[in-house]
Image (cartoon, rainbow, N blue to C red):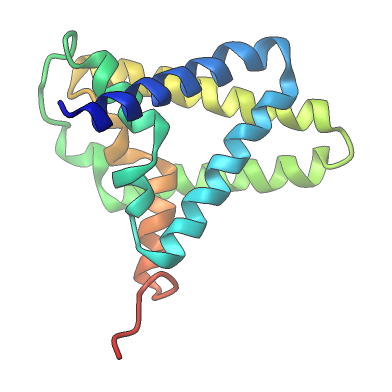
Length: 161
């Protein structure tokens, strides 16, 4: 592992832990999750899936932290099927948009919602990362699916001159 990769992984683990633990005590920290979602979509507009490859703190953290403990098995076929991924992404977007609309005037509650979204998906990522591969969550990640969708409709493709 290069020095740069080691530093990125350490920062990713620190960020994920800071949000997961800190958000319990300070709900406004949950807005870091919303910021990460916005950054992911913004990066996708420039280059599809670049966030997953270069900047996703959860993917890097899971990859490093779970590597020694993971069974290294492939995901079952249907687990990461386009239908499953889109259903999970659609459910997440429904929850996010609904809660933003419902809690817009209550920042503490909205921060708590984003924190909860982070913790629940992190727990799911750890479980499937231990059972399968460390970054198995990345195959079903709703943000990755949303980035694929944005890229597929051409919003994130560069025009060649």
